[in-house]
Length: 116
Image (cartoon, rainbow, N blue to C red; front, side, top):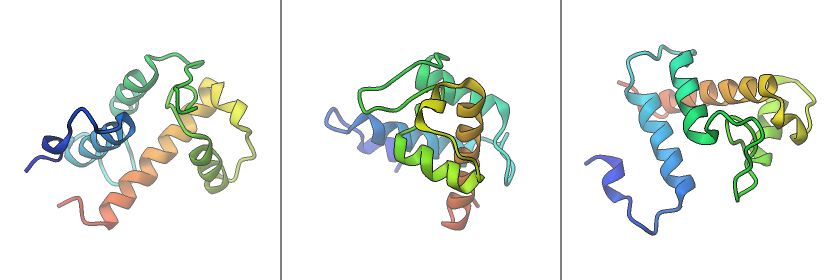
């Protein structure tokens, strides 16, 4: 059964987005281990923020990749950078954190056996 078959009008949008990201990362052939293609990054940014670096969601997600504050600081620690959450509006920094997160997510899914 396809995971999106369980989605209904009561499913929070953040859950649907996460499910779509996971499906995208697992199924598209343009991905190789440790690298998320530019096309996927651009598709996610387009879907998340409509390419608006100043986008803010009702949940407080910011910038191109619509990253939550907790995720922002967690990824910045992993990247060994000391950026504030206000830096999420910087296109270059947000893109770097978004790509880093997508690569981390892909590796996590590989470890969990989601790739064949």
